[in-house]
Image 1 (cartoon, helix red, strand yellow):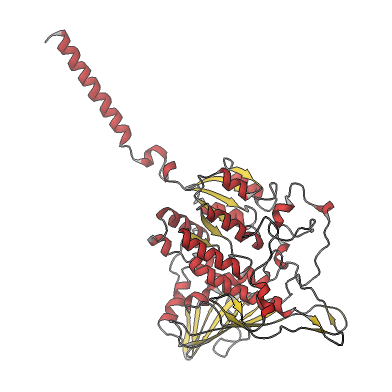
Image 2 (cartoon, helix red, strand yellow; image 1 turned 45 degrees about the vertical axis):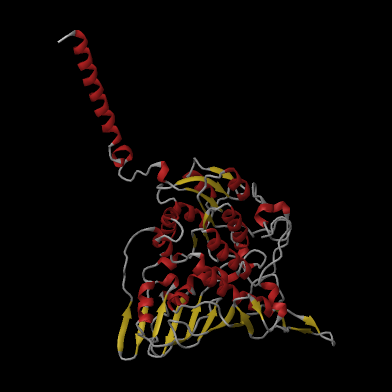
Length: 486
């Protein structure tokens, strides 16, 4: 063999050897390259969090799925907040940090999905700005501050093909499937009455608002951005990070805080949509004889709200739903043993659906479902899923649906996408229309004050309008500070 031929053969062998080595690298399993749970960057969602203290801390953490997804940006008006903001920043040190969500979204077009967890009054502006830029959204409960905003977000998500989820994690609790099964199989017959209740408020409520005082503004808090669409005012001590819940400019009271968790159970099981009417009464606070405090800017210390619903595909009779808060709860029906807690230990929060043949109860988030029937031992709901996944995988399932796409199987199986949670939120906020209308008053000819809207308010759900008390319609939406309109 000539020297030239030997050189050619050697070159060919070297080429084959190098090609084989190169091929070996290309066919290595992904878990060998990056560990068992390795996910290539191209397979990760780029996610961001708006409001990353308080509940927002767990929302962005759960959406990251233990680091499976890539958190690229965080936003909070309180950069040094001790209510979880610092912990979020330390958990995701590579994420860029912003105070203004608009700046964050404009500077990061690569963001695929956003968690939104600020105060109630900021939900809709953050969600609209995100969806306008085609970002998938996970929005804390209640979805919005008012009915108009809930309808806007619902329609916008559908039109823009946004994968959405509201943060009422109990909607993904598999224990709710027991309740739905009992209803679907007619175990308690047609349901005519539903009680839902909570021990909230557990924050200051039913009192006068603290006086504004800029000298007490926490270091670093961007108060103007915190106010967002609300009227301009100096810093109000204590409002941030939690006491805002008790004031209509920012929060939605006990009903807004817990309604989307608790009412979700009967709303889903009975196939409800818009109520036909709403009526309420509220607790009074007396600091002097015969004269209750008049605080229209604040939520009441307690309330009772009654809603009526037409028959549904799942329930052929009309339904009356009674909500109570402030620690007021229903009494024991005969079918429930007198020494047994209503719904859960202590009976602090709960659902009670009363049918022709029995009663179904659950605790908050659909926990501990039970069925009571005459002459039959109490039936406990099945524990279908014993997974330790945080919050029943509510945020993770949303992330999986974002990856699978709009109208995918994963998307359609979400338990609180806006097509469902929008009408649920509207129902919850209907109660607040009644509560706020309850305090409407005008001076009479003899100088007395008349509370003229303490009536049953008739609701046209399709058109979002009270039909028999026009003044109540001012609470269907809100006025926005210039620059924050949606």
